[in-house]
Amino acid sequence: MQENFSFEIIKQCPKTGARAGIFHTPRGDIKTPVFMPVGTQATVKGLRPEDLDDMGAQIILSNTYHLFLRPGADIVENAGGLHKFMNYDKPILTDSGGFQVFSLSDLRKVNEKGVEFRSHLSGEKFLMTPELCMQTQRQLDSDIHMALDQCTEANASYSEAESACELTKIWLDRCYKAHKGGNHILFPIVQGNMYKDLRAKSAEDCIPYAKCGIAIGGLSVGEEKSVMYDILDFLTPKLPNNMPRYLMGVGSPDCLIEGFARGVDMMDCVLPTRIARNGTAFSKHGKMVIKNSTFKEDYRPIEKDCDCYACKHYSRAYIRHLINAGEMLGAELLSIHNLRFLIRLSEQTREAILGGYFPEFKEEFLKNYVI
Image (cartoon, rainbow, N blue to C red; front, side, top):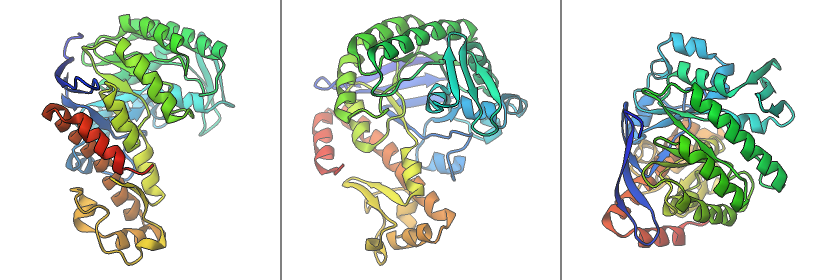
């Protein structure tokens, strides 16, 4: 374990492998399993840090690629780091930007040096090397740094996935050498697409670099959920037991439960705030499109047993009105609800693991949740 970071498993479900633990970090303990809201550009869209505290968020994400381009790592560093810049005092994880660059397929070129890409903002050309990736995250002063990796699409060929794994391994070694440690931890990222032998090889390559955390990347990139679950069934037993396992970019309620059931400890996704801006809410019975006319005169809360600020104070009819009138408050309230829904689901999962009834909890939730 790296100094200042440690992980303890409090209880594990003997039937599924789901874990309840505590991830100790310099900026506070994180009770796992945990869902992490995404604050890509140093903000969770439309929400204040106080809102995040009220909903029980323990850790959030920001993104190296976006903050590198705007406002720039120097500006954040001169402000005293990301926590002071955005007035947030709990742990922050910064993604390396590898996935964002992956999504710029027509604007980037990948080679052993790093990723050559053109800014989606200005068209300016940059070279993101593993060393620059580490330097940028160090300037941001986030708590958890992600290694630069190459992600591939769900339908990538074996040779494409194998090449990406090899490049990810080379970059990881350079990230590790450039990483300074101290009050920051580096998470390697296991790649390999949907090919189990490549996943096994990538995990083997990553483990020597994993000091207190390892990530699973390259899932939820277009494959069927059943394929993702099959890969997790195969992969998680091969990952270290004594450190957090982070499944990247996955966050629908059913996937959250299924991921936790397979021994994943940390998950994140932009989904809850993205669908909120489109007028959609999570509920234990599935998604609710609040902007639809069905809710025009529905004066009930989004979900009657939800303890979020939106459900305590506002009705479906009012929030529908806000969304359809283009008022910012509508997206804000739905974002609060959706994030609290996933955070609460994580808390309930932890309670079920500690109470010894997780398999029953999982079965009951998935039986009622309509995808």
